[in-house]
Length: 98
Length: 420
Image 1 (tube, rainbow over the protein chains, first blue to last red):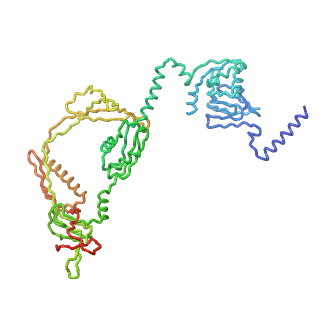
Image 2 (image 1 turned 135 degrees about the horizontal axis):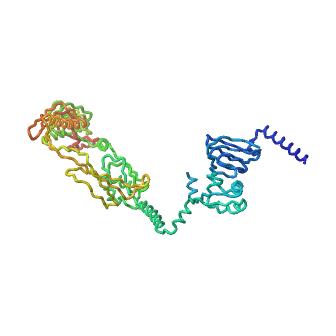
Image 3 (image 1 turned 135 degrees about the vertical axis):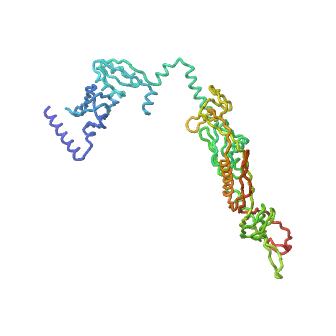
């Protein structure tokens, strides 16, 4: 077990080194989440995995590396597909958690 | 916008989801590629829209997540069709309407003529009607090229014509030859047929400038209609100083003559003045093909009134004219008042008329040098009469009489001539 984590850590290091030195896009290499906020009322989230929690005040999304919480009032999911989700409403905050 | 229309065509439902693990349900939906939109959280329930096709695939997911849904709203064409499936006449009406529109679009309902300055629209319409091109003709029977050719052949001064169909409108563009007379003159000059300039009215020659031909009159000479002003032949003298032959040419000269115009005008001192009371009555009607129907004027109790009729063509889009027009008839009441001009007013009116007459003359290139018009008013009438002395170009073209027999051995248009 210990060997495996070590090996994967090494692998991670190598990968991050390559990504950083070649300046490869992070969203493709790591599957990092892209949050595009347009004005106060629209947020477009790409590269998410699923919905954990959804109320009018809070939408919690699982991404590959972390959780993203969008806080606001009267939040509505305009549409969502496998890759992206568009949220409208009065946005008050975007929080990242592990 | 377009996506909304597509969604409407396909049909979608608004449903309320409740149960054990609705979040998981939502995730599974996205994993199964079932599109969900307008997702809202309302009192522990999720309300969202899903297409009809997506709805059918929800069943296994519902079982897996132990959730249930209630349909709140059905939107879209499939549901409308279902609701109205028993109304056969309604559908028949839709198809009939479509069919009628299609049938109407097979005919020409409006003919537009552009570019005609000399020929009136109605004249050309009449001409086209004779050539079997009229309102309500099948579009397939129209041969644009033939129309163009007929127009060019039928009217001498139309030098270019173009016909095109646009929607149910036949657009005819023509180009008229504006310089017909000038060109004809040039043509004549080119033909080289010798010609004279002849006086067309009584005049005193004011000035004469001859470019070609033999002038017969001098400044100050009095001429009568028919007198030759410039003759289109030049005498050629032989060695003895006698006229041996004539050289014919197209005479060309600028001749100004002093002529007289008589001016006579009379109008009564009494006239009728319309005082509009501002009261109006309107009646509407429709015209289908040549049939007309209109509503009567319900509240019209006018004694004297003017009637103005407006007609609005019904069209779809910009150029799809239907054989239907809405007419609007407006009656305006007026009170007729008999009025008499004062002497001053009458003089003003008469002067205004005279001024207009003079202006028309000036536009024709006539210069007015003397104005002897008297305006006389009595109790009944106002009369203006007198003469106007003007300077204007005179002279019309006439073929030169070739009286001589060509001599032998002469190549040109030369011949023996009598002494003049």
